[in-house]
Amino acid sequence: MTLKGINAYKKGNIKQDVAHADPHKLTLMLMQGALDRMAYAKGCMERKDYEFKAEHLSRATAIIVSLRDTLDMEAGGDISANLYALYDYMLQRLIDASVQNSLKILDEVINLLSPIKSAWSQIPESAKQEAYEMQRQKRQAAV
Image (cartoon, rainbow, N blue to C red; front, top):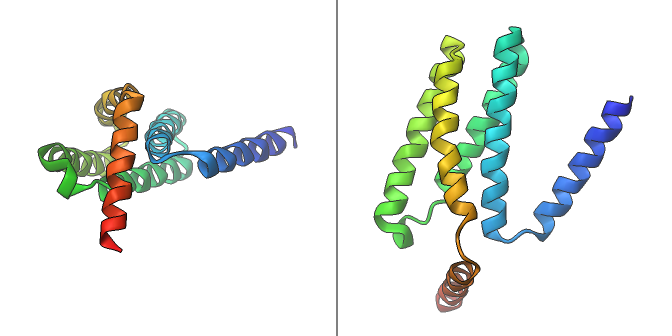
């Protein structure tokens, strides 16, 4: 009973955070969500709880697909192309981890995503504002 209340409270906070987040913060939240789901999947693998392992890996996969598919390939150039390829690799490795019940492969994906999240969190505010302004101008020019 108490756990349901705590989970409902956390979901409410997440919805509020998403509603007020800028694109940079949303990306960080997605990355953290993927890392959390992979950590939960590891615990499920260790406990041989295959139903919830599959659920958590499915959610992690969906998040990584979203991260991959929202890359701005035009503006990002080589960086976006490299990230796209890396996200594709992570997706394949998540499938491998699931099929093989491999904690080692899951750790590999976590170790690939963690530094990307860390680097993303260190982007200076001035660079974020510059990027938002460029996007705003791009949208206005398209209208």
